[in-house]
Image (spheres, rainbow, N blue to C red):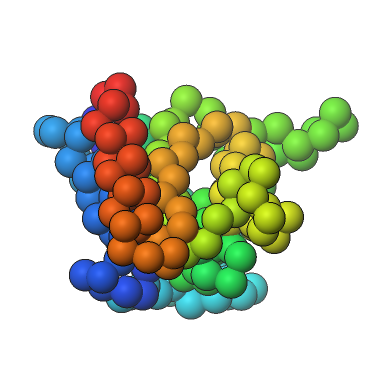
Length: 188
């Protein structure tokens, strides 16, 4: 089994999403794991030279990431919330795997995902409360974006959520413990 593990938090060892994504990846003992820390080694923003078909080094690097994604069975992502959405570093990686003709196609009936059959597990962390029913739910563009982006290419991601991490030590500990219990219950 091929697994891609991606971390995107800028907080290093202080990151909740990194700890949770590592715990998820560890559940897949024996997997062939490729790790990307897109915060420590960010991808440049997508530009014309990085698009498939160009002969530039940036296009070749993008193609390599796409090929890696296409060959993977499982993708584990640590995705903290920054300003209501995902880190731009993670968006850079997503821009390289959502590619027309490779992971989705436009048809007369609408877009069709071509990357189904992969498992995507995302450790979502956020300082406040943004789940459905929370006062700030209307400005949550992290989990909803990730669900839409992966759904567009035919994948329904699984989410492990730890939220309210900035609401005090006790709340943080409870949210992390609940997320860890959910991870320990994942089918692998």
